[in-house]
Length: 150
Image 1 (cartoon, helix red, strand yellow):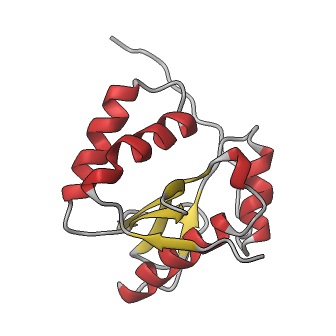
Image 2 (cartoon, helix red, strand yellow):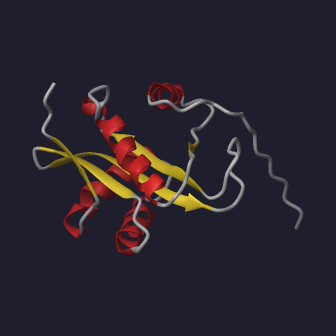
Image 3 (cartoon, helix red, strand yellow):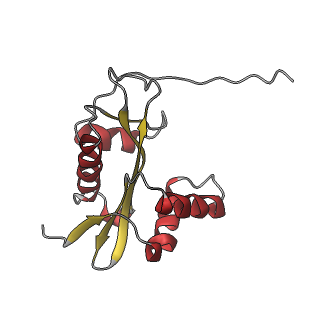
């Protein structure tokens, strides 16, 4: 299937669509905050941000960071960490997510990392399946707790 898919770093003109995809990924977060973060990420010098474009339309995003702290399930440091990975529903299952992941993997390797890590909410089984389909191996499950003390 020839999608005319292009994966590239985001540009300023992409901010509205990029922010919209971030809001779709994290619907519980204030969309204005997500848009502001996207703008900050656009101006960050460390890269790791990619959008997928088909016919001039943005259909996916991937945002990665370099983590130096311990990342659950990894054996090296630093590691690349897939912070955000989203493909618009109409484009899922068509290779867009894999193409975005390849860009993140290349960025991670270029920084000298040998591991790429990610996470997903416990009930997000679609994300679990997408990760496995792209070669990720589940390493552990964690439940976080919090208690107010003051």
